[in-house]
Image (tube, rainbow, N blue to C red; front, side, top):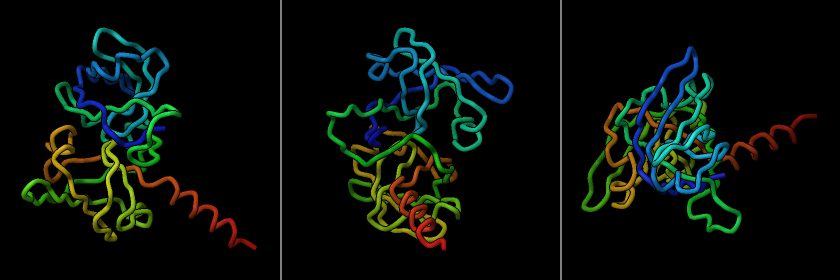
Length: 199
């Protein structure tokens, strides 16, 4: 489990395609400081399993399902990525409950700069809109954010200076893809309500 509080802005070192899967090597000195084979690290909000650690980088295997459901396939050497290690039971939950299971890929529609922040509009797949509510939580490229406005085809978020400086969202432009994970609690509630309404 993650919190959506990005620990480090890493960098893609290599992306090797292997048939319908890929091997990704990521530089991230902070997150590899205690990483071991089998550890989980979220890369742009995607929970991945470490297969190798060398110096300040780690390697992960990315299966077809993950490539199809996320924007990881669009990365290239030099691409910046948001990195987060899993939360420990004794840690503060600074963001919200994030699983690292991407629900879909959205797209930056626009950004409006403010005095110290940007308001960013992000388009989302129609089947995810029902889980996005004003003042609710959403994860964008692994970043826990609060929804400012929710529409049927998009939502807006306000990015504070820290988010602009320390995450990939400070560099994303209209047309860029982003990984989206909606609030897992909303999905469970929907499932339970549907089950309870059956005869």
